[in-house]
Image (tube, rainbow, N blue to C red):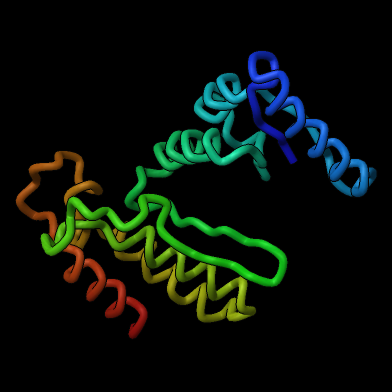
Length: 176
């Protein structure tokens, strides 16, 4: 577990965050590894060596920024699922939010929303359904024929499909 903040500048607020994170980590001593990284360094580390990190915990402002950096590593906000998990409750949503600028345009990449559904299925103990849906998404993306403009090498690619067509291709892949 890596706690991320900017306690060298935000001494009181982020200092408190680190103190609380240390207290929680102490409760799991010997069961989890714990470290602290400054947020600006974390952005660089994620770009250079993302495989070194598993769980990142940070205040919301930093999380919003760092999650966008991480989304860029996997293809952008259009493919990054999101989850907010608490004690006995969870909310799943695409990292990009509702993308209101694309409302009614049949243009938004449905992958982030669908993969958020995959995460929800796993959370609910429906691993087999999650695997089936995830494999269908991966197959459609790998084929590259029925993907939205943001997944094409050039954003103005005339072979890009809309939200509905990509979703239909994923459904068809699940039916195979």
